[in-house]
Image (cartoon, each protein chain N blue to C red):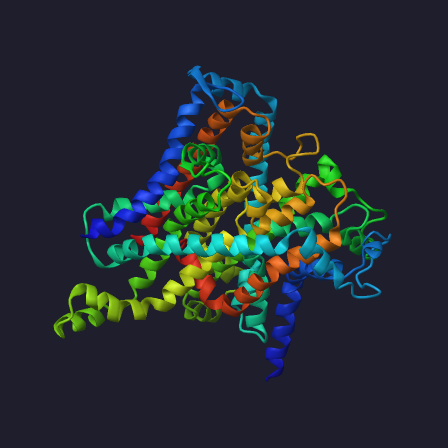
Length: 283
Length: 282
């Protein structure tokens, strides 16, 4: 009887995830034509071509930079934001709503609006920075490799903050308030009680926020695809955007399948880290 | 209000001001550009305030982007995908929270792994799967049905997980009392359990709906025919690969596409946020 209730979900998830997974495994060791016809078995051929491809290697390195920068920036900003939102102050409900707002906006829509805001000639970012005296002339942000990627990282951080702040707020509310009073009586300063009480008690939540964000950011496709499609001159490709291009633009399904599989292994490894953390939290 | 609270409130808002500005900045850009006449959009240097409100942007955009069709497609796809996900997740969540069965831990782990898999990682396989399934004259590629099934499947894990967490908080006594009163198990579920669980189901449905509404990658891969595109895809197509972009129309479109969801989110924020993180933390 319980299995009968679980069965529909299992069948649907298995079909829609299992079959594509099988296809990807099959293609990754096959010689596949531009149009997706399997012509034979090549063993590790697709993988060795993948590793020999300079665009792939550059995208791999950039994915690492992207993930570290976005997750690191998100956590560094979200912690103080959560600490402030935890205070009792006038208008806290409004402040929480504003901070959470980016969550409701689709990533592709956010990317479009930021793309327009960073427009070199008519964008409001240049205007605002110039009127504040922070820029002397307009910058063509999205046309230059050295600015396009950092802008995308900044957008990535902004859209990841709501989720992370929520996890931190959950963690902060689980800390009993009286330990701070006790620490204050013992003469602890605010910095001391943050470093010696809040941080250690928040560690579980911090770890979960980091691991989940790593998985989400590693898989994040719309921001870079909408803002630069991996350009200019392949300078903003991360693995997911390159994977999409290999699959549907460059017509190299065999190698795309190899890239998919490599990424699945990485995500699976992080998921296992998360599962272990969860079971330790529960214990 | 004491002076201390006033001072603290000022400090808190001051500390939050950078993030508040950054969050509201894109909304201000959307609003400002959406009501500008095109010559002012392209004027240099750009200004925040237009000299007149160009409401015609919305009508022009509605025509040029075939916005109504895209809106309808997004509604149909998101509603049916939500319905599909809830329909299969609901019994599964009930089993997970109420009936001990062999392999329950394994099932939970399976859900967790599927939740971590983003469709982009499987995008090539998903496309080939859709292309292998015949439907009418063609295949599942470039059909709304294909997108609905994929959205539904990828939302099961989240929906089942979230529903099960809520169900665990509903006291068993309620149903057990109904059994004593002569209700059978199915009757107790229908008459006692489901009404109590209704708010949880509603929150899960809303979150699933918003996720489908906002999705981009699968729609980009599966849909080609302009009459089938979803709203997000339609708006992206106004920008991507265009030589000249009508930014005032694009911002009018993004505003219409995001504002309803943002307002709903702001109103229901307390419940939604609680639900959104339930799957993640415990």
